[in-house]
Image (cartoon, rainbow, N blue to C red; front, side, top):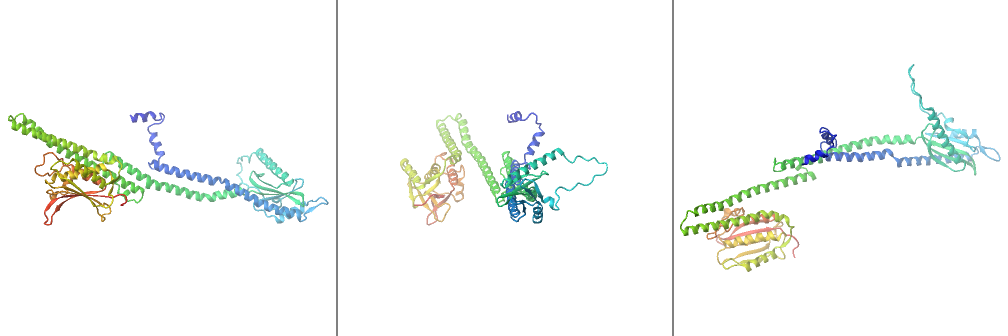
Length: 542
């Protein structure tokens, strides 16, 4: 179904050979994450390059700084020209063309600049390019061999249009300055180059004698030099971005791809757990992820093994009563005496009860993990919980059953972070187990105390009886599934052997531990059994 949908959505003009190529083009080393890292780094770098190459703000600042510099020079020169007597004519003064031109030539040293002086009618009196040895223009190209067809030097019509536009812009600037208005503009020169121009009126007192124009055509050259100076840094930044993309690909994208491949192997049952030692040794987030995945898969693998063992144990335990029932049913038709038939009937009833108890306990054990993960843990006061449980036993106790005594020795509330339902099942199973071993006239004792020497699990709950105790070789075996060792006289099939196994499972799920030991007297003789549950405490002591 999925393949049909993918085929239907594919571009009909795209062949099967083009699709893998397109996927490779959008990846970097086979990784979408690596391609995204590279694309984002290059995009940020291109934005930086674009902004640096445009340099709009810097360009405007350069033009303004150049205009200010030219304005200061032009004010100085115009003031000198207007006040040092380089004038003629009485009573109306005017600039002396020869004296003004000679003074301008002697005192103005061009450095990428051009100075022009106009009279009151706008006629050109002096041009620094004309009175200095600086010749504007570009060097001539080398001579061509004889017979070479030479292309036209340029469009004469375009050159004439450029010259006309330059003269028109310059004329407008001169006319405005002759009206006494200082001018600062950016325009094109006769050669088409961009120049920064400042035109100031030359005054004698209040009389405008002419206009001094200063031009600087080196703005584009300065900007180009700045861009060329920026190029090495841009190349270094590009190299650093490529290196960063490569390192991120090697140290982030590729490990994630390896973890994904290892997870696929676990999914396909080619491995039971993820194991990548070179990634697990890393002391960063990738190492944390690898260790977490390994721990998770190992836990899942252990859970799968436990489920398999549990299924095998269940099959074995159920098979025994079923075999007994089948044998009794086959024998029942052959037995004619009423006493023997009654005995076989009792065997059948016992096996049915045993099978019912097994199925009930197996169902409870199989639902236990789901119940522990479904509810949110909350603080549970063991003193209150055990008081309620003992009260129920006192109310429902039958004659001949061992009473339950509770002793609260822990100062203040004994709070545990967990679930009261499963914790109550723990103590009920331990109490039921102790009562089943207690002789007539004895009692079962519960004690809650605090062990200040154990910082991890300070709370202790002891369940003690006066029974025969536990064989020393079975102090750990009693917590295994389906283990039973009952005293004489106990009804057959009344215990499934899952009670203490469920106790350990619940206690360990709450971060605690449970252990079994024997009580002894002064002579060293066993006088009963003791189960100790150690749990971590939560909250403040009052």
